[in-house]
Length: 153
Ligand code: FES
Figure (cartoon, rainbow, N blue to C red):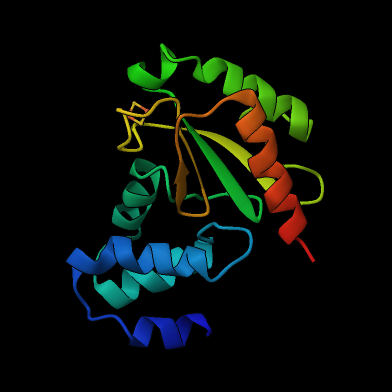
């Protein structure tokens, strides 16, 4: 579905802005909102481009920059931090050969920090493609990444 068709499904209401932006990102394998999309969304909703940009800046699920097919977001809030989220980050960086904030050369994975993912009772946690994984250990992370690599055609 192209952007014009997607916009047609949304009312000209500011309270649907986040849903619309998430939907646009979901349609693309590189999970970001382009400059042209920002302009079209602003016009459709009837808000300024600055307003759209401020929403994208605020929500960690949204991005101005192209990212990998799978965006891995690791919680860095206190409950996860004190339950060894750093070892999860280290395992992911080693497995993928990239640092936090980077995307693998094949465009498959991006690594990002996130604020609380809402699973503070089961730390440490991370989210990939809208799915949250909890009680992580380095071995569990290796199995999860292997599963995602296996999905790639
Ligand atoms: S602090 Fe990590 S999920 Fe809430």
